[in-house]
Image 1: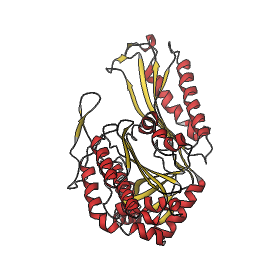
Image 2 (image 1 turned 90 degrees about the vertical axis):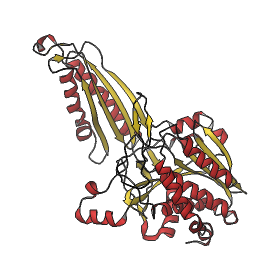
Image 3 (image 1 turned 30 degrees about the vertical axis):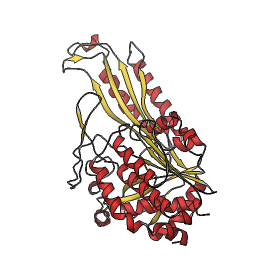
Image 4 (image 1 turned 120 degrees about the vertical axis):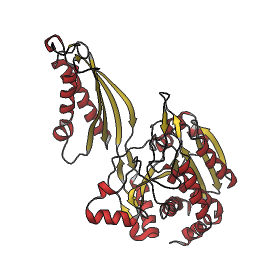
Length: 418
C-alpha cells in the first residue's frame, strides 16, 4: 500500500460500523427507478455534512457532490441507486418487506436484488474518506448517484437535465458493480466488459378462424413458432464461433382459447452483444427473419418490430483500466484479477460519453468466500451461488463493503494522488 493510500484509507476503521448500518438500512428500504427519494436524500445529506457542494434532483432523483481540493485532475465516481420488483427470499434480519404500486396498479415487492445498496454505501464511504484526508490528494472528486439504471433511462434522465453543465468535466469516470464472485475479489477488464442489450416486441399478423377450420386462417401462432426457431440460428449460423452474442425469446402471447386461431401473436426477445458491428448485424438479421417468415406465411399485414429497451455496450478505456489495474494489484495483491466478459448490461457509459471522458468499470465480489469455494469444489457454482436479480442474492456485509470502499478510493487516488 502506498503512503498516500494508507493516509486516506486509515480512516476506514473509524467509519466501518456506520457504513454497515447504512448498508443494512438501504437494503431494508429499497426504491424503484426514479423513485429513489429516500436513498437520494441519504446520499445528499451525507455529502453536505462532509463539505461537498451538492446538487440534487438531477434527472428526478440524481445527486451530484463536488469536492474541490486544489489544482489537479477531476475524477467522477458513479453509483446507481435503484432496486428491482423482486420479492426477497434471503431470510436476512434486514430483508426488505417493501411493496410499491406498479404501473398497472398492483402491489409489487421491491428488493435490492442487484447490489446497488452496496454501490451507494461504498461511494458514500469513499466520499467520506476523501473529505477526511484532503492533505493526501489534490484535484476535484465528484460523487454521482444515478437513478433508474435497471430501466436503462437514469443516465439519460440526468444528462437531459443538464448534467454536463451542472458538474465539472471529469478526466475519468469510475464505476463498479458487486457480482457473484467471492467477497474480497476485485476484477478489471480493458475493452469490452458488459454487453449491449436490446429488448424487442414483435407482433405478427394472421387471419383468425375456428380451430377446426385452419384452411380459413393464416395462423400467427405457427408463424411465431417458425420465427422463434429461426432466431436461434442467428448466433449459431450467422456469427463466427469466436463472436459472443445471445438471442433469447422470453415471451410469446397469442390467442384466448384452445379452439380459436387468433389474428395476431406477440413475441418478446432480448439480445446481448459486445460491439456495435455485431449488434447491428444481429438486429438486422432479426428483422429479416421476422419479415421473411411473415411473408412466407402469407401474412395480410407487415409485422411490427418495436425496440422496448436498449442499453449500450460497456467498453472500458484501455489506458484508464490499466492504471486502475496497477493500483489494484498494489493494494489488493492476489485478490486483484482480470475479470471475464459479463452478459449483464448497464447505462453508465452514457455519462462519460456525454462528457467526452474515458471511463473504467470493474467488478467486486459479494459472495461468502467459503460458500463459493465449496460450490467451486463440487462444480455447482451455477446452482449454489445466487446471482444478481435472484430473490436470494444478498452480498455478505464484509469484506464486501470494505472492498467496495477501498476499490473506489484506490482508483480515485490513481489520478488524484499527484
